[in-house]
Length: 169
Image (cartoon, rainbow, N blue to C red; front, side):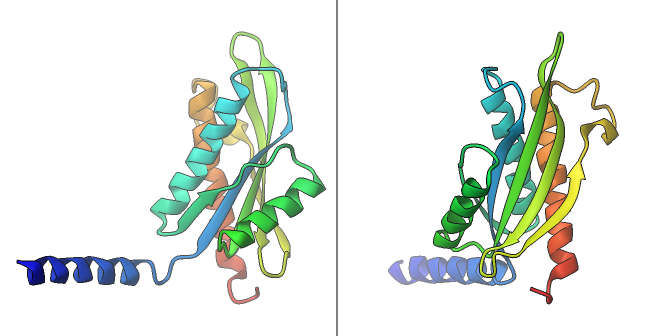
């Protein structure tokens, strides 16, 4: 019985090692670029963007963790890179979100810029931004749904950028 459990455990560990062999490790940081900072919903909407980005990267087979830094500034960028490096990430994905206050809806994401940073070289590569006005059905989505969708798209743009530059970095 002990041997069976041990075999099962070793098989599970081997399967995990094989499945994660090609996976990159990403750190994700969602920062507020501009918006109504005094809105209580804003932190939940930023968390939705982060959730969408992490979900998409994890679904693509990558190892993902988040980094919380306040504001989109040069000093927070360097802090995020240091935290990503300490966590073992190969790449840092910075998502800078802009929100606008829409009457009747509250804070709504209006743009998300995406930057991929190679943690070792600290080289930055901007990915395509995510403009919610180009997303089908954006006007009908609740702000939290729209934020989640923006996170998913931001991750797709970041992963696309990694694919384009893989071998260059």
